[in-house]
Image 1: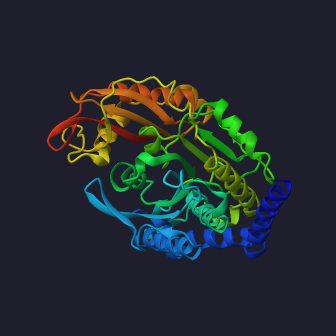
Image 2: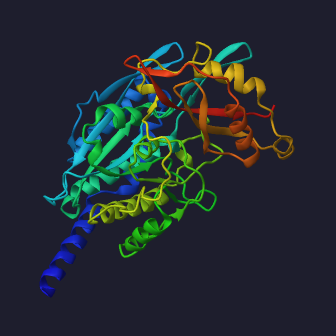
Image 3: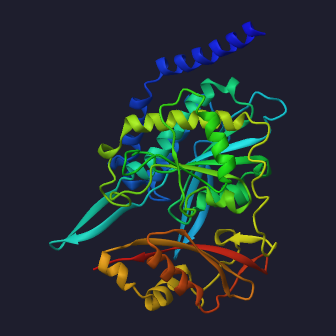
Length: 428
């Protein structure tokens, strides 16, 4: 028995060492980020040629890594309505199958969004000037990490009991549309997904922006899992975030009762600006983060039961289904118009900038979610990405007193619909 254990340990060490010799992970991460954030992709706006090129790049990288592709290079295509425009986007999906016959039909989804904000044209000295939002950290860093993670999982697939699905989500910046589509429409095996790991903004990892893990799993279960990971050859481990749930591609999974774990190095001053450039990415930290996530994923995939206590203590309100607005045949309307009209004619008309926030120079975007009930009333207003308590409270207050909407419909029947909106507090 001791000889078998020693032999197995040798195989694991050899495989890990072999991977390190074949791949210069840090250099590969840098190569991915520099391509995805390059001017030729023009900020990868949802529906743009740049987003398509990013999707094709991801497809080729996953395919070359030995990942079994579940979509072709054109991806899992879908369309969304943004104001008066219809935007076509896509998800790229692949799988590394688990080795355990009893568990390989269960999945862990690893996802990262491929899109960003695109370009913005302004006028300088009477001439139009176009600025590119490169999105090196948001989210070229997450996609790069997923590519290198997929390479390593494929190389070491004999270590994974469950199957791992890798997804590059399109149109995350447009109300997480790609992940909404994957969860609610496109992936038939969603009922067999046991956990979702989200990779969003992993390019920092310093004292100001620490490597962080966020989950709605109980802290006891999460801490227990993280303690198991400390037995692996890791350089560092993430802090456990204490803040509210953020808006990213993990949210649709959580909304259907799937445990989510999100890895990030968090917000910074270059976020959603033209200065989110590859030169600010800390590639050595990215490499350490990628290494930790690999062992976290391996440990999670090898457990007999994944987060068995998840959901048992959750308070269940109205058991009737809540649908995303993108799933409705007819979206909810605010006075016969869209969410943008709601922001312009209600939120920004009646919101009051808290004096304490003005005095301290606090600004930012508060993202709120709320449900449009079948009678059009607004309920369950929550902050899903906050800035400051005073701004968060004001955002919730103004949305909560909204007049009734025209409810969403599916197949001619009114349905409860969830909407997520960003509310910007800007100081002049």
